[in-house]
Image (cartoon, rainbow, N blue to C red):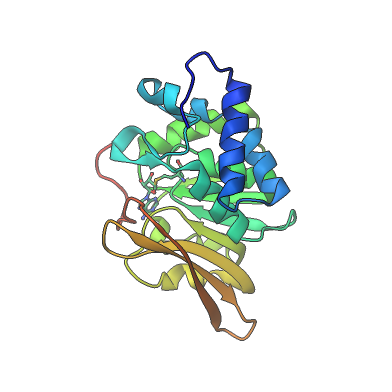
Length: 219
Ligand code: SAH
């Protein structure tokens, strides 16, 4: 759909919400979290004009802010309860974190770039989010001191089954992650069966930046 340059942010947001709905993001609390989150503030000045488009955009450190549809679908797929403690791997811009903070009790988020972590922390402060706890580190290892989690969301592509993260999930918890080594991965949902096993479902094809080992040496 054509973006008219003189459309107000409200009109642009309404159009984005309609687009997400038509693609299957229908959970009211997820749509409301997206609608009340000002995506332009998570983007770089150069791309701010495109913040209401349903597309991923570049952020610092060669990373990306996820596509709103994918953010909505992943949040919906996690089936989050207001009492849940959620672990997010890959803070990036902090956009997905902010959406999670509106539907969960506590969000723990890990990022391997100091620059991105600091920028995201600044946004959380500006927004007055009091239920987001950040950590600079290798998210592939999860956050053992705070485990187990009700829900885990991985926003970078894991090459295979994320075993360390699955071990930090409650017995009936849910984990959603893009899985695959190539440019296109499958968004996979693991639902704990309460006995140490998982029901596995493949949702859609997605394109995420890779989950990398260790923290970034560059800033
Ligand atoms: N959720 C983000 C998407 C960021 S892209 C948003 O809404 O903006 C994925 C992020 O995962 C990048 O910032 C990347 O640096 C980070 N990442 C990749 N591997 C990681 C790892 N092992 N530990 C923590 N963060 C990682």
